[in-house]
Amino acid sequence: MLLKIPAVLTKEQVAQCRATIDAAEWVDGKVTAGAQSGQVKQNMQLPEGSPAAREVGSLIQDALSANTLFFSAALPLKLFPPLFNRYAGGQTFGNHVDNAVRHLRGTDFRIRSDLSCTLFLTEPEDYEGGELVIDDTFGEHRVRLAAGDMVLYPSSSLHRVTPVTRGARVCSFFWLQSMVRSDAHRTLLFQMDTELQRLMGLLGQDDASVIALTGTYHNLLREWAEA
Image (cartoon, rainbow, N blue to C red; front, side, top):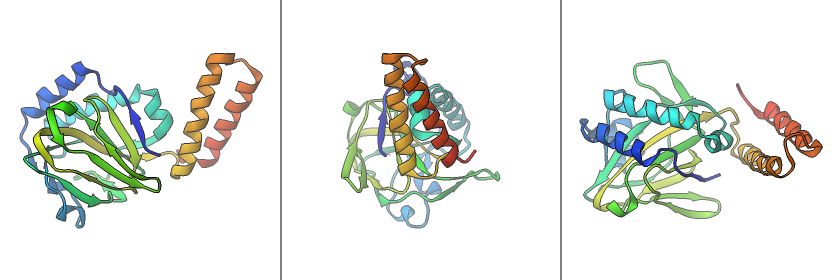
């Protein structure tokens, strides 16, 4: 499932994030690349664990914890601390698949990467190119969102970033391990939860059908979840 989540950050929060990270020191993005992706990766990143990355990453995680659409779609168990990249001057990231396991340097924290997240921190009119292109069984998806919006997609997807030919594209990117490993199961649960919320609005939470379907949702979650 590929899902665009609007307004994860407000415009004021985006401006706050940019003021912090734009003033920080950036390094070659290959520092977090695997053997294969390192050959096709051309960008700049904030170092993992830098003060700016920790400060802005904490703000993003707080915003995500309050976002019901994100929780319903991702069912997050563990979240890798947000990282930050910048593309400019023709920089690009060729076709690659994200590593299956992500390890936080200097710690014993690691996650299985079930879902990848890209949170845009630049308005699309401020740069050219820089599309996130994701391939799946339904074809090619080109993503270029407003600042503060985020896209969520399976980490198993083949994806790339097209060259940035004008301006600079700044994003936060990170991975999460879901309580539900299977993308198909997560998709079914998300579809069911979406319809349940709609039915609650129409019939009320005390309606017998709503109660029964809520029970079915939680029984499926109980069957599939790792907690």
